[in-house]
Length: 190
Ligand code: GRF
Image (cartoon, rainbow, N blue to C red; front, side, top):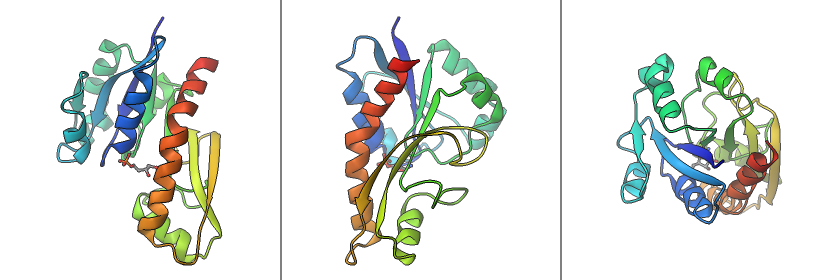
């Protein structure tokens, strides 16, 4: 049976497309749905010419969950990947997909996580605290922001000359390299 993946994204969507491309070579797993809460996000442009649907909903739509639940069920989604998705996943959804919702965070959790810690804010905080390293954390989603079980981390050095942008570039490189592979290995194990 093919395992179906939905990717949720709120921003630029570079990870979303990278993951989609990676899974094109698989016969037993596939990205079958993109989901966003932001119709103006660049992810919408990136995925509009790909051959799978994009479902757009509002913050209320996520909180009520019933419509989204129907969409996920219709697409027979087995795993959900959050690739730069900024809203909190409702408890009902966490319950329905135990250890099947995977998030990536652009820092070494448990540091620099939690509500409001996303994007450039994370890198700025890492630099302000003069950390010597940062990296990525891939983890399961539970009911608290960035607190689910950690699956994988990879580090990069933080140099004196780094800016939030240069650090973001290093982190993006790690994300591109590892996120699809780790998703595949999680799905294989289940
Ligand atoms: C990534 O850095 C990810 O770790 C974070 O949001 C960013 C999304 O980047 N959660 P993109 O939209 O995939 O380019």
